Length: 171
Image (tube, rainbow, N blue to C red; front, side):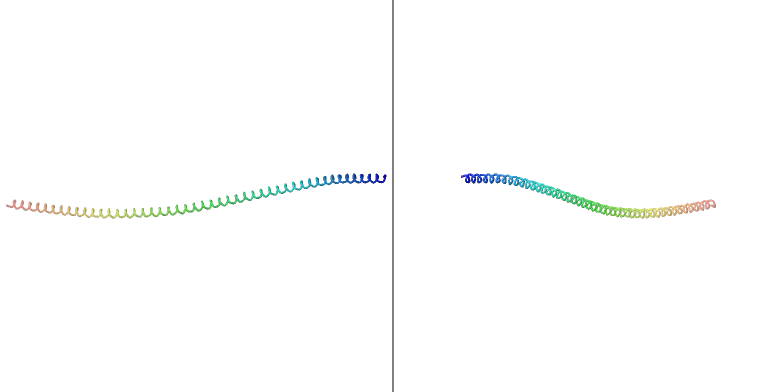
């Protein structure tokens, strides 16, 4: 019986030891598991943080690229506007030059026409003056001829009168 009791005690002690060991093992496993879970959670948080940082970095990179692209597009638009304005100014300058040349040509034609008309008028005036001069000359010659004729008639009358006077005196 003592052996049985000793055996029972040994069994009970063994069971208690196993139970204590099991509890200790379970507690250690739970602590290890808790530490493992904590480590895993920390790793996941670190990975999530890295992932968020990478996403933020990519977003910033993408925003920078978009900003640069917008700046390049704006610069291209400005260059195109400058080119268009330069072309417009060149076109206007060309049109202005053509208009100036056309005006100068019209002005030259107008001046030439005026000169032509002036020459024509002068020629007409000269012809009128020549005709007036010729008429005046003719009138002068006619007047001189008339005067000469009148003088001759007067001389002839005087002569005739003188002759008549002489004849009367001779009679």
